[in-house]
Image (spheres, rainbow, N blue to C red):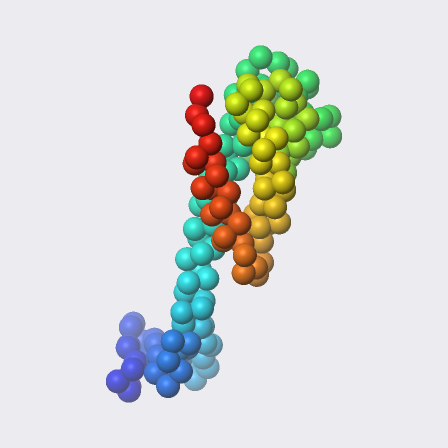
Length: 176
């Protein structure tokens, strides 16, 4: 084995030092191999994707909690969610063995939470109504980014900046 390689449990991992930052990690098994780029581009891309995942999941959970806490505590769920949406989230919850209406909020999709908050904006606490109104366009911009991140699609150059900007905005939003 050459100086750039390592032997781990009968599998050779060879780093091609001639390619610099875009080095390929090659795995050799029984005469065949495949290469995975581990250079600065793809490693940083993985870090960006994981960071975006964490931020977007947190935003998604917060939006669901807003729907539940601001609207669901005082009203029947049939008054909050559109009939087709209610049917969809009840079906999802039932497949996981949940039958209580209080459980279905966790099965709202990101854009469904946003639409529900918009539709009931007048019933929200004034602080949250202002948040929804002020950040409506930003929430719309997050949906395709969320889909790219969650479905493993290629990220666009501006995705991280858009999410980071939104997070900075909401961090500075007045608390109740």
